[in-house]
Length: 383
Image (cartoon, rainbow, N blue to C red; front, side, top):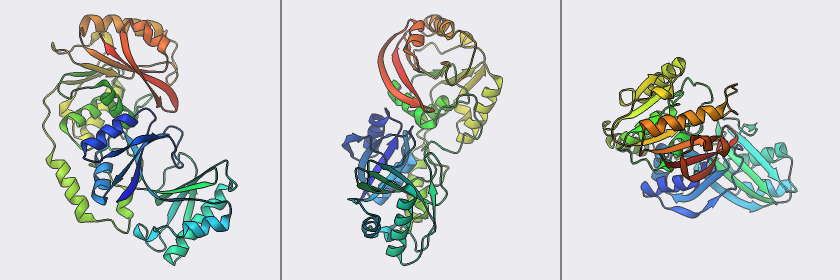
């Protein structure tokens, strides 16, 4: 069994727990904010224990996780010699080949070992000691992606936690979003909004500010049960214990669960270039025929007669500079939706509760999140 940690955008942890449970993987009850060496946006997460096959399944299926870490070990250390000695006792040989290049990302807080370059050098030395051959390494700073195997080292109050990345590039990189429009939304956050909305996967879904199409595409993939990691490679594929036959079995099982589309998913935007990008992204994701994309203002939206869900990320004045009065935009949005979408459920991602209030929609829940490093909230309610 492996002690694993699914890193998430803070606020998405309950939905990652929900996803793990749906895979038959029992998450641990405690949600942690202590993330080894992750970017400022990815500071939440869920801990769980899993077998190798479940590690593969989690990377393939989780829609709201940013990456999955395997916790290799932890210990207290106050000297560099002690750090190297204790790190060399970890079971590196289960994962790495002798001489394999690694990337090391280090964070140090309130510890006597505070020089991150020196910490990285000692950990690389420990790997070499354990495997009997020098392991070339590169040191990564916060937010950098890595091509070699990523090792994350976190020192807090002289307590050292060492983890291995299992995912490779972050899991929001599904492979379909080659182009983006203004203020792009992470795929993991878009999926989280759908979970937060409580969308049943059957009723109509509308995004009247769809941009490059992330929310409708994630909705179509969720509805059709298309695994988000279906078309990408993962870090664990470079491990010594990687089992290609086991992975192929997991992938084939995922593909066998896919279903055809049977629900209206609608994305619109006034930007013709954004709609062109959205259609191209949907085609790469294999859901182009499942989404009705159109170019027009939200005031001209057309929806099915049956009530559904609106999940959207409209402009909110920080990520997009605009001279428009956003209060008027939100007020008009509320007026249009009350006429066109009565009885629909709605969720809006926005940084400003005051601006959202101009829709005059009764929002019942607020979920704090982070979007592009900006604190935001997801406002959910009924029209």
